[in-house]
Image (cartoon, rainbow, N blue to C red; front, top):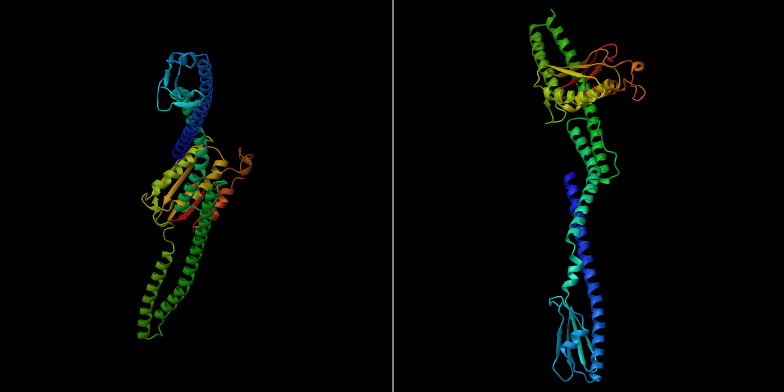
Length: 404
């Protein structure tokens, strides 16, 4: 996008310069023609006066005499009232399609003076090198301005695209641009609203699944116990015991159906956004390895279990970012992170001492209080149906997230 905006600025600047140059050239050419016409009119009146004096002195009016009083770059035609025209062509005269001609009528006849207009066009266009240099300078300046403007215009849109991609991966802590561009503000507001609505929906689904599981399984379990107790009693007839056994089989079916219904609410968070655990671990480790390297800390990440299990990357990225933000703010030495892939959960462990005590952080003056990221990670993990245990200070820090 930046390249297209920069090229558009350059083309626009060149178009404006060429258009302005064409208008300026046309205006200057007309001014020069008017000025030349005024001078030629003065020459025509002067020549007409000289011819009257020569006629008064009974001197012949010849082409040689007219040439002696006319400009060398002009053509003069004297047309008497009762005679043949006398034509005088200057040595520097060159006829063309843009010739300028004026006439002056006196008692003896009409004097017409014509001057070539080609010289005026040459004056306007006689510096092609200067024009090319001007165009090159304008194009360069427009390119620099266009590049800077393109960066300012494209950056909010790129951030919005990244935020939309994060929302599509299941992340709700969107990094939206701070801009005064109305269109970008509208898109950012829509993304923020969508993130809040999706997060609220996930919380409601989790609450529903927990409540549904409790509301369904509790009476089913009670009924199962009653039926099992009925089956083992000695004072119960055989037909009643057989009926209780059949009912117990139906209870098992109901419990299995209730379990499947609850599992349906725990499906994929974002359909089509899942990635293999191996790829997800590489992305998280690479991003934070670069950030921790700025503080001269090394990140080592290991993955165990089925690496082909699919996970929605958003929740994993969001929780690990919050936890590792505390790691980046406090502590020293290498950071070890272990990921365990289970059938229904992803377990992430960071060993004890990864996050230092608040008072021991050498970055404490310039950074937020260590531990705030872990606290926020607990809330996020709980919203997704997981949990965070430990603090990373005196004991292991463990994150448990469901496969969604």
